[in-house]
Amino acid sequence: MGNRTRFLSRIVLLIGFLFLAAPVLASPGTLKLRQVQLDYPSLTAFVDLLDDEGKRLAPGGEGVFAAALGGRPLKVSEVRPYSARDDGLLTILLVDISASTGQERFEGLREALAAWIRKLGPLDRAAVVSVGEEVRVVQGFTGEKNALLYALQSLSPGDASVQLNLGIIKALDLARGGVRELPARRLILLCSDGFRESTGGATPEEVRAAIQSGPIPVFSVLFDSPERDSKNRNIAAQQLLNELGFDAGPVDGKTGPRTAAAIRVFQQSRGVAWDGTVSNELVGVLRELAGRRKDSSAASIGEISRRSGGQVHRVDSGPLPAAFDAIASSLDDAVAIRVDLKGVEPDGTLKRLEISFTDGSRNLSDGVEFRLTAARPAAPQVGESAEHSVDAPGGFAWWYAGAAFAVVILPVGVALVRRRAGRVTTGAPSDEPTVMLSPKSEKTGRIVPPVAVELALSGRGDGHSVLKGVVAERLVLGRTGAPSVLVVPGDATISARHCELKNLDGRLSVRDLGSSNGTMVNGVPIDGEYPLEDGDRLMLGKTEMRVRIRFEKRG
Image 1 (tube, rainbow, N blue to C red):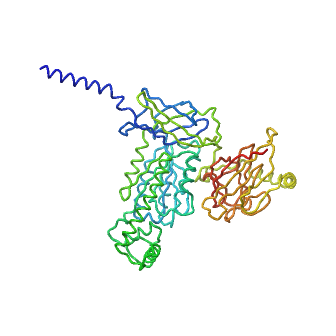
Image 2 (image 1 turned 90 degrees about the vertical axis):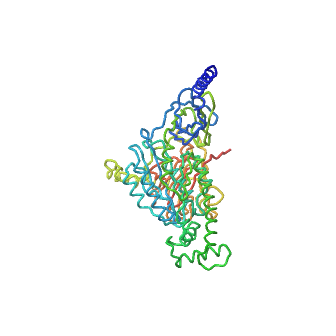
Image 3 (image 1 turned 90 degrees about the horizontal axis):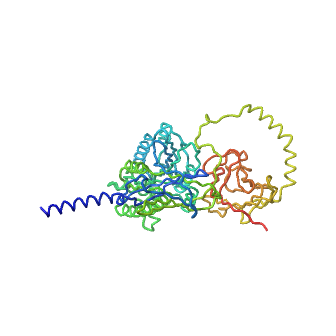
């Protein structure tokens, strides 16, 4: 009886210990900072708070969040659970349309993405962006499911190459450029097989720099086409050749002249005797090379995804819907933390944001580096229809008045400008910057420091990859050499006087000069003056360039 009593006492003590220790055993084990949404003078950080088993935990009890920017403590003004139903989600569907994807696999991808679209809630918004030989916004942000499904249906795999890095950069720009009415929680859903990355395009370093301009999580779904594992060696060879960039034509198992030519080119590149026929040895070599390239691509995309706050789901030849379901479920029950930025200067410099959590038993933290910039004026959304535009009252009357004003005033203005303008170096790009005389600020009368700019042209390897200029008052960018024009060479879609950079009391802005093909900043067409920040992407015609800004010091 005594032994039984002692046994029961031990059981009771053990239960009591487990009950008291439950809060400690359930304490969080991981904090992951997923996204930073800047809305100066505040920001919202979306974090995942997980216990030791990887399950979501809602903040509460003794748990306390803290924030610091560049080592400076900041006030946390609000902590609340994120709710997709109440807050909404902004998704950019970034879809690889290169030929290596394969028609059968692409159909499965389209069905999985269509299911994602059909599950959008009333507050959710999405955009469809295709990435192949060029990056194209097929459908801008909208909550209309039919419009998104129609855009998805219009896509087909057929491009000879894919600019994945540029696609991610443009998707980041698009996600950051949305107006406040769009959901603050945002993500990019990249769907690709990881093959046929074009040479000479944007680099991984440019992608990392774009992430630092404002982290938006990139959730990547990497897949393979089932044809690569086909027991029919003709089908397998065609698919693998296409993945490696050798154009074998449709994957149909018919080894016609196109497939034979692709095999011969591949064999020649390997320095072996070429006969243009399919063999088990050929398929084995193709599989090995394609596997290495896929691993390399997956590593690069994975690093970018994790750096951005996202995840990688490598499904290979497995079912696609499971990957999208896993991503959707991972977004549930995140924590939204609002941080007060009052007193912090939005100077555009790179700073590290640290979010930490303590519950008395352990301290968890995560951080990300990004550029703190001031709020920008609202820009028109990409894909916005013309029916939303509104003409000013009395448009024709104002037009005639403006024309009359131009006839009278322009000749005088031109004469004055010619008298006051400094000498400007023009012509082909060189290592020497274009220089203009320093203006005085209209507000203070003091001399405004010139702003030096470097325009790094994407995908250029012709010795003119960087254009340099110094903007004292204004600097025109265009196609042909003329006074006060910095030439952007090699693009006939750029107008002679395309746009101008202006130094507004030490702040740089850009204005389109009525060009034929328009000017875009971070993927958004501009109208009127638009402020520029260091790291912005400027697009003139078909030429995209990254803007680097620094102030000139004059003695």
